[in-house]
Amino acid sequence: EEVSYYFPLKTLWRSFFAALVAAFVLRSINPFGNSRLVLFYVEYHTPWYIFELLPFILLGVFGGLWGAFFIRANIAWCRRRKSTRFGKYPVLEVILVAAITAVVAFPNPYTRQNTSELIKELFTDCGPLESSQLCQYRSQMNGSKAFTDNPNRPAGPGVYSAMWQLCLALIFKIIMTIFTFGLKVPSGLFIPSMAIGAIAGRIVGIAMEQLAYYHHDWFLFKEWCEVGADCITPGLYAMVGAAACLGGVTRMTVSLVVIVFELTGGLEYIVPLMAAVMTSKWVGDAFGREGIYEAHIRLNGYPFLDAKEEFTHTTLARDVMRPRSSDPPLAVLTQDDLTVEELQSVINETSYNGFPVIVSKESQRLVGFALRRDITIAIENARRKQEGILLNSRVYFTQHAPTLPADSPRPLKLRSILDMSPFTVTDHTPMETVVDIFRKLGLRQCLVTRSGRLLGIITKKDVLRHMAQMMNQDPESIMFN
Image (cartoon, rainbow, N blue to C red; front, side, top):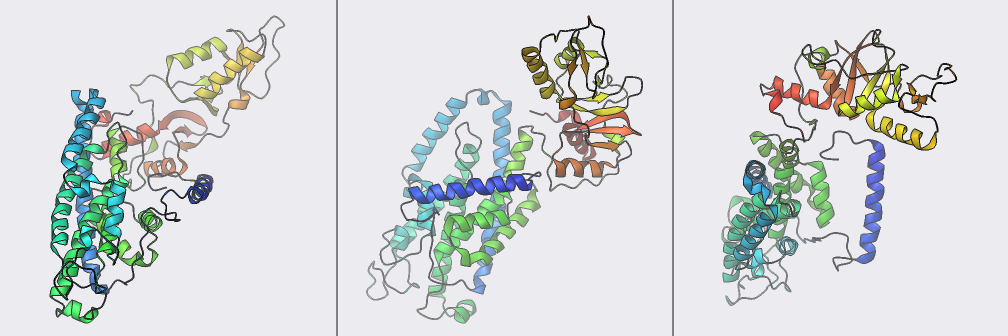
């Protein structure tokens, strides 16, 4: 839904039904062992305070900067992989990356463990039963490492050690994610991005917690935090940071907030999540409006019309349609004077997705549009099921075939595969309207007519080349996969 510009209601209902079945199956097998449908279920016992919006927004800024840096660095590496000899050895690249990851990640406990477990640990609030290094606070009574019910307590050596290890893990994750996304072995984007944000968020959360302890007389903390009261929740900062970094990479907003709800179950923290996600999107968009998916679509040469880009130029359909004056004439089919042999030669000599059908070469009156796949299947079925279909058999796209001489071979009737109402525009239609039609209807091609006479055709690739030309790019430099 996020990256598609053509998402009809039928597809939405199918997706919903598939998700419903998946939820029932997930609940029945209980994969996480916690009787819940979510991977990182969190339950915080403290509300968030208005002054915390500032660090949440700063986490959003970090997420936007990380997203912009990641997209540029990853696309540069993937382009290098495609354009150099290194891309010819994908198995070697996977082995190298795996070996480097193992050697560098093993010494640090936060990079050694499974990333999902790391995120869960970073999201979890410290309680009396937690044995993580992140929860080794000093008791105010005797200075020893003990757990107390007072949340505002000074960090012990374990917490400071964990902070250093988390900083090193953050640097490692940032570098490795750039190289692993786009490998021939799927390495993920959601979980690594969430891990980077969760690490940064936990670091900020612990820093805020210690500020609140050592400087509880500051105006911010004095106004909102009572002495001995539960005030800062570092796990919440990890959750907000994870959403911010994922938003910076994918540029998702509403969908992302819903995804984080589904992963964590933290419905009461909608405002911090929305503030961080929107900030990360704004900061990321300041450096480039493309998310990682759009960037890879463009890198791989897929003909994708981005719904977020506006077309504001004043060109007309006739400026874009083919054939141009220097091009060969358009490949068309006539409705009643082709033979099977001539039809097959047109199909074999071209690679087009379909062909306009006209009354005759002289009149150029448009009758309809026939897809290449449908024509091929119809010819094969006719030869297999109907006797008398030969190479010199006549092909008719009309409702009724005329009476033929007795010695003539049996005609091939293709009226049933003809689209009688193909989408057409006039040659004076503004390209702004044509682009909008392609986006909203999911078209692959559109025919250009004037008073019912066929003039040319516009394909999605023609639209993309024209848009590149309008942005002062070389249209021939766009390579389609």
